Length: 126
Image (cartoon, rainbow, N blue to C red):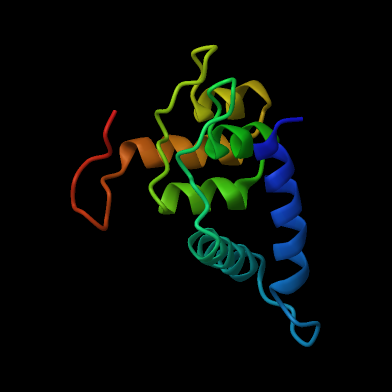
């Protein structure tokens, strides 16, 4: 198991345990949006390098897509992770999501590839 996978798993457990107090039950969409925002905040506070890659050329986005971590994929996309990054086997994060049948992750990556960047007003680099 590479370091990205381990980090993703550890941070997911930590974030899931601290997002909401037990007093209210938010809608599924609100819960997911909150998780995305919390994850983005954590990435920024911890200086998480979203562009890092392991010995196989996989980025955190490759790992999240491969594991089906939809919230992670969404957060990394919103932080402008490279959705076109190619690992040493020639696969993009989208390829990993499709190979593992993670349809929501694949849909998020496909939508990101078709959408202009909101913050800078430019198209994503390919």
